[in-house]
Image (cartoon, rainbow, N blue to C red; front, side, top):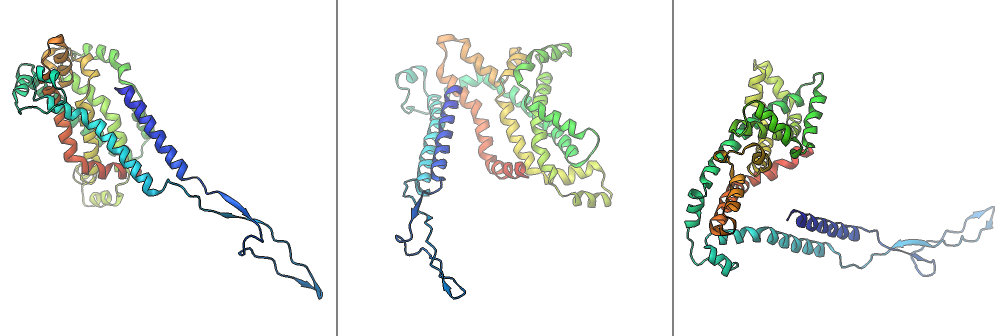
Length: 345
């Protein structure tokens, strides 16, 4: 699926590039002689010492000619809208199919996979929540992701604020080391993390998983919030300092509320990334009682072999996707209105 989406994305990008290149080419030019165009200006006769000088020969010049083309703004906009509609259908169709299948039995799914369910029966959701232990995995995920999100937002905002507002020796080095953390692949750190957490006695525990989540989400949080804190007016902090406010009060009561759009945006990104995390839990959390949703889904899909209850499986998928979808729908305006200003500033 990843390879297919990558190919589709590259093809779509190539088509967009071709359309803009074709419509942005300069118009063709044609040579027009002096006799063919009455607009051509002929140099006047210049008299020197009462001797008439013949007029200079008109030099042919190039005139821009508008080239007829079908690639107008309306055509490009129409094609773009059609492509986007197709892309939305490609993305949403599997989700709608999973939602419909979550209300069917396994036999109904195999007999008529593309038809609507005959009734909206929630037995699959009850079975997935209780029999498949999706409820336990859901609570575990909320605990791990919630704690990690609070810690990473607190530490990340404090680190980004100090690096953006204060100049000290080595501040640039620390900032670039944070950026280097974004380029480090997660799978390369699995073995060292396993040995480290095992040495501290945190392997297969919630605290160990929370600390690991925080460590991998911190570089992105600092990088994202650095631009927001960098653009905040220094005069406000100086006025608060004159009034007697200390550094902690300035940060929590003045600067942090002013950076609320950026904090909300990076919190959403971190929530989406941590909620869907699979590699770290599968390597560092092998205790089945502490499974998160991604591990529970994988275990549920593989434990029954060919006798898996597909209705309950699809219901579990809906339960897993629903919090992420609801979060994005609620905060999409906040996300769209704050990502661009923070990155551009």
